[in-house]
Image 1: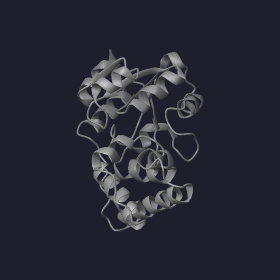
Image 2: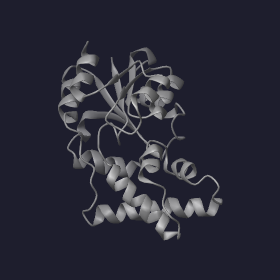
Image 3: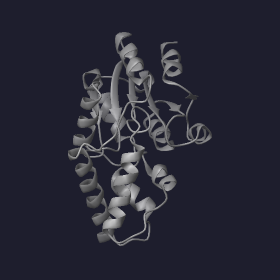
Image 4: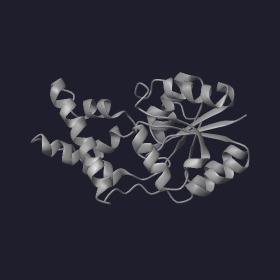
Length: 216
């Protein structure tokens, strides 16, 4: 059996606007000037506490905790108010459907929460395609290999038949740490050169190119 594990934000969905807005609200709630959106996007892919730590490394622990909770509150409010935008990238739905039809087992490994991922997949109508979902709620942050190791265990897959697909260097490093293939996509948050340097065997420019590559 062949297992393809996808990162979510920056690979399956484009949630950068909602992420930046929630982070800016969290910083404002603490009376702080938010980092630039470019820096916020650089931290996407890490679990939320690690992302906050990267954005504000010298902050006291209590302030980091407050920022994490502020981000969660802002994100929940955006979802409740109907302002949350997490659309699939063009071509992703078709690519996932074709892989599923071709006999691939599909999974997700993301820095999102269980609840956030469930909402995202359901809202986009793709939840039924995945047999294993790994999130920050149950694992150390990427690039620790725990998410991929659990995904393989749940799917009954071996490392040599597993591929991790993502848009950040954290995804590529996690794949290498787990002993699985790493494929980058260039429509997300990190540059192709970073993905290759971090272990990607190839970097795809479109979802259709990714599909062709995997089916080969």
